[in-house]
Image 1 (spheres, rainbow, N blue to C red):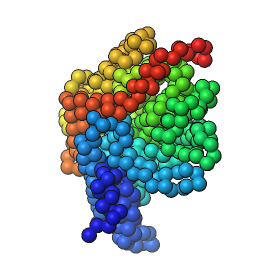
Image 2 (cartoon, rainbow, N blue to C red):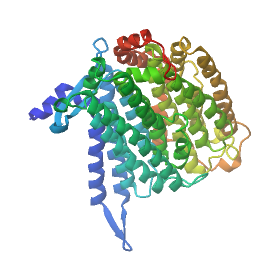
Image 3 (cartoon, helix red, strand yellow):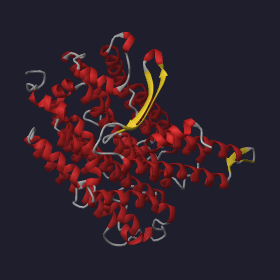
Image 4 (cartoon, rainbow, N blue to C red):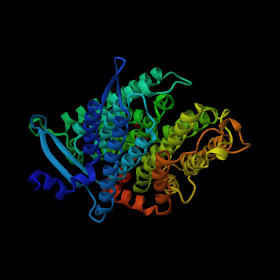
Length: 534
């Protein structure tokens, strides 16, 4: 018989939204137990047995499968007509500070949660061939996924920050142990990545503490995001305070989002990271920045968002064009996709800066779309590099002859990156352009022209590495099959499914952004601000 606590979790639907985090943690303990129970001594060295390695992989894959299934259930069970936070859980944790273990999802966070579980499961299968210290690898991978999941389902800012800080530790360790050294050393990549993430979190922390202290009197202070948003609507934050606090959050979340000039860590980090970390970092972790700008920056500090919106729009265009130009000059596949990721985040920033419900909806949907396509790109690059130990555009050619399935993955991701109709990237980018054109027409035109440069470096890359004459050097390498096909299947289905049925994604996102309509209408009626001058 189930206990009262178990029944409340099931009946409340908490497991449907937040299972990613508990499942990942359960996997951590399960992997630790398996690894500890299957150590064999060989010549005074303790190594994990083959059976234990297989058990580790199976436990992680099972945990992520459960998380994905329950998230899909929550996705289709979410009542879009009601909207708002659903499947909530709220337990007092640190009463003196007003901290609650408060979790839940809405139309904005639920697509992010689904994205996390999709990429998390694909990342597990992409790491199936890991033989060096697999127990430690999968434990760190599950902690990383659990931390990312926590940021998207947290309704309490303290929990949000806690989960974000949890993410930083496994990333650094995984890069310096299992990373690859090509253009830059893995030690350099890991250090640079970690420093930028910690720098962003420092600015973020100062902004959050300022919000906490300013919102309510000492006896009423709380980290609850909805309460802080209500405080902003009640006029508890002055305009000057909002402008200052939003700048702190913009630097913090912008660093994570690879906003110019805080973008340089991103390509180096991807290049030095193992495949799974590159997938999660480009596909999910980067999106915490955009999610935080909407959830915290816009809802809690709307006047600050209005003030800095023109600057954000300008930086967005630099992201789009500058990163695209740099991508044209790259030869390492990971660097091409890394700068492509920076360029695509420019579209997200432009959608946010336009400050209307259409553009913001496009920004949220584009984060999901880019997450799927970038994760698929890195999964395919990882498979090719694992077999050939090559990542250069000049060294790889004609792979479609020997690896047609891998070539299919590259083509799907590449066409989605171009915004081809019928794939996941089309509707989000189109929505951003529609929403931003009326606010920043010049910037919107420049951003649209960025698609041309995206086509140049993407099609050039695909043409060189996939097509052309057959290279006999690669005849000895097998095409993806079995477990290696799972990332392509998982991410490919999402990429095509949301492209053919865009309302599945856009409808969910729209139910989340509807709550922003009154706020955005108020901002549009306010006097225009540009660089602090009204």
